[in-house]
Image (cartoon, rainbow, N blue to C red; front, side):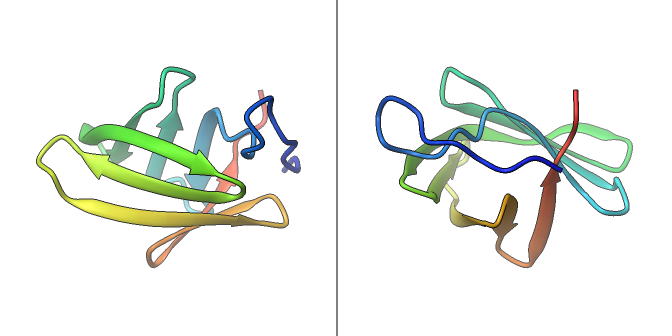
Length: 88
């Protein structure tokens, strides 16, 4: 797993694929501020947009549901989920 670096806007560099340890949940954070989350065999189970402030993420899915996440020591804590950056 890799750490995070600050981007030009002062927020964490979060772009890329984040995955739970068991691989069941895969969350792609795209450079355009959109995310796409797969769960098991269900692709695009959740989609929406996200913003980054420092190491904090705010999510709004396409149905209007909101959630938050925080990156600590290169790990994304999103609700009850713990996601790790997938190596390229």
